[in-house]
Length: 347
Image 1: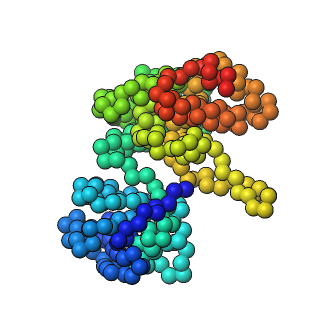
Image 2 (image 1 turned 90 degrees about the vertical axis):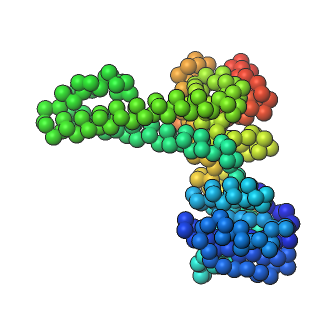
Image 3 (image 1 turned 90 degrees about the horizontal axis):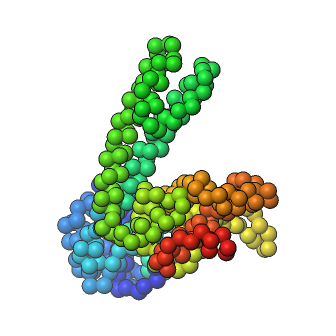
């Protein structure tokens, strides 16, 4: 965990909401110079901190509404930092809690050098990353509709559906196998939604691919040298990482991607694992998909997992392969090299 420990003359802690923001400014001695609740209006905020802009840092907890404030501070040349929400226990564990108290605690954390940092994603890539996440959300909802159709088929003990339902042509006469009109209508609604979502997903993919290449096309194609990582998975990994240089070591990268477990230890005893939700869930999903697709395309990967499964079980074996794949992606991005399957399995 990284903490912000740069000294400033003034420290601004903000408890940010959608319509209001509680601002607290401390000086170097820890004295409260300003404590005020204002609307989330850029001009109002800049006017409020105007007397202290000579040497000030602005910090907020990482919630969904921080984009505009980060962009405003960047445009105005004001240092801006994000606090990791899952690490900021100090502002959630008090006996009394409100916006005024929280803003003061945030300012004191910054001043004391104990403000846990989250990554401030750059503005120029943020919109494409969010569009990718939205595309993945639609894909997951489409999979839920597909699963509901198969479950309905099992409910009435009908012959198994052998066709792949992710292809539109295989869904054309699917509803006809259900005799009850209400059940047929239920399945037709699922099929209609799948068709609509498929059109939107394809349009989003075409737009994302055409716009994403301009950011880092060489890295984009290097990632696709890994068997199982195609155009979309490469984009997800590229945009969720943003800059591989922000991870000093492969261990930190794998931890961020949720590819490793963090043990809880005390007095030489292990009490299990913790921190499962700390990290990037989208990277975890991408590497899980890449691991499964890697096994589909590589016979050596299948044999590798089968060998590990005899000792650890299949689930653990696939996790080990996913971790190994994450380390390989880290090396590809750091060394700007392509994937070498022989080297991958020899180390």
